[in-house]
Length: 238
Image (cartoon, rainbow, N blue to C red; front, side, top):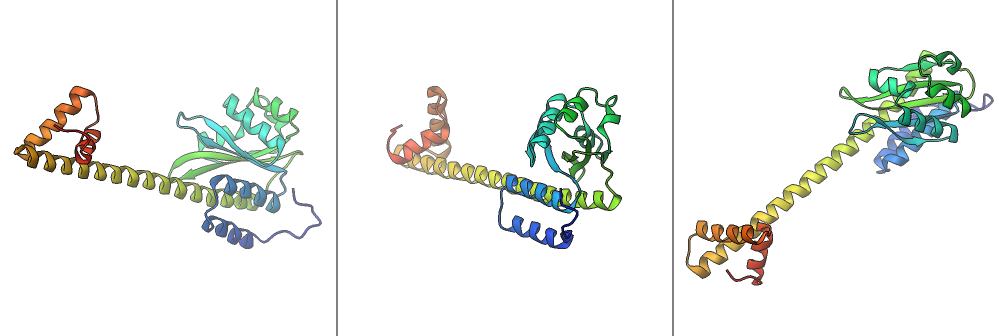
């Protein structure tokens, strides 16, 4: 939490620095760590934690910048209840100024959060194009009300982080697809070379040469690409 005697950091400067970090090709882990740093610099909170949705629909704790925050995130992921869980499921901000007043809502989570020293939590959804990716917990060790402006600042930082995570995921997916397509193309080229070599050596048609390759692959439990490669290299005579 920022000391009240310190000059408050400028939001525009923080966003500019945040954007530069993304241009510098930082890892998602590093970006999430900076999200925690900037949030505690700009807001009167003691820490943050981030949970991301798993393929099964649950939540996984991926980042926390305080020990208490880490305990809270792990508890939410384990119990599948709490402000962060509700923020992700409902797609909206969940403000809990005093966890003591929320025991009935989250009977298993609240005692563990209080035992870790956390008294207030404000949870923000992480969404992109309607997809709910996870949520962010802003935690405080004392009862805390965040103003609408402070919540807007927190959501802005979260949204910038989501944009980076989504673009990184899209890039990785495109790179994977490109590698798959290149692999398929390379395989097709080798098969065509093998068909031509067999056709010329045996005096058969291209179709007959391909059938010969395919029969050998099936009868020996070998991939067609591997059979073709062996023929092209001269390791296999058919």
